[in-house]
Length: 404
Image 1 (cartoon, rainbow, N blue to C red):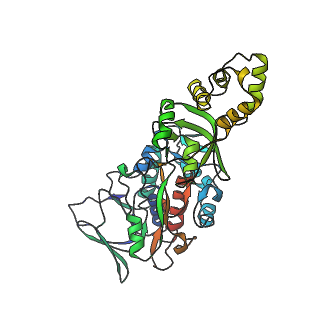
Image 2: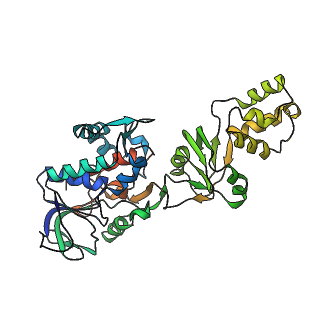
C-alpha cells in the first residue's frame, strides 16, 4: 500500500476509485475495489486510519454481531440494508478476521470482540489494502469536488485527483472530537441527493433540572438487568444513573427510537412481582421499612430513593395493597420524560444521513449521479448497539467496492 505525503514527489493524480474516509466502510470498499484490479486512492483528514475502530469496544473493537439481521437497523426504508447484509454477512467478516489469526470472543448477546486490541482490526484492513494495491493518503482534506468528463475532479490542498468513481465514506457527525463532520451531507446536497436530518443516536438521555435534583444522588448506580421501553420497543440490558440522567446499554439502545416530548418506561426489576414480594414481607414482618425490602432487589440507595419518591417513611404494616401497587409501578413501570440527549459529543453513531431513496441498494451508488457512492454511517441506516454498525460498514463497503 502506497502512502502519499502532502509534499515531496509528484504522485499520480488519476485513479479509478477515490474513497473519502479511511474508516471501517472506506477501507473495506477500497480492499474490494483493489481486488478487482481498480486503482484506488483512500484519503482521510486524520493522522491515522481507522480511528473510530481504535477507540471502539473499550479498545477491543466490537467488530460484528452473530445475530445481525435487517431487523437490527433503523432507516426510513427498513428494507434498504437487506441486500448488502445478505451478500456480505457477519460470517464473511469473521472468516476474514480468522484468516489473520486474530483471536476473538463473544461477550454478550452475540457481540464479538478482539481478545487483544482493536488495532489488530486496523492492521488487518491496512494489510488487505496493501495486498490489493490501494494507495492511502492521510492528514488530507477535500477543498472542492466537481464533475469532470471522465467522472470527478477532487481538489486537495496540493493537487487535483481525477477519478471515475467517488465513494463517500466520511461517516456521520458522531464523536466530533475524532474529527467527525457533515462532509457526506454537503456532498450529497451538492449533487442533489436528499438527506434525512441527522441526529445523535446510541447516546445517553438527560433530564430537566427538577428531576435531576432527585436523581443526581444516584449517579454511579447501575442496574444490570433492567428493561427500557419506548412504545412497543424494549431493550433488556443494563441501566446506569449519571449526573445528567440515564445511560447504559438499554438507554443507549432506546435513544435511537426516542424523540423530544416522548416518555420512556423503565423496569428496574423485570421478572420480579414486587407487589407479591412486599405482601409476603409484610406478612412475615410488618415492622420492616419498605426500603429494606426493596433493597433485596435493587441497589440500596436506589431502594431508598424509590421509597422516598412515594413519600413512604413508615413500616410495611402501614402500607395498604394500593400503596404496594404504587411501589410496584415505581419500580417496574417508571415512566419518565427525558429533556434531551447528551448530543454529538457522546453519541456513538448518527441516525439519519443520505436518503436511501436516492441510492441503489445493490451497489450503494447514487441513482442520479453515475459513479458516486455513499456507504457506512453516512447513509440513513443505523444499527443497534453491539457490533451492528460495524457490520453495516463492512457490508455496505463491500457492496460498493464490488461496483465502484
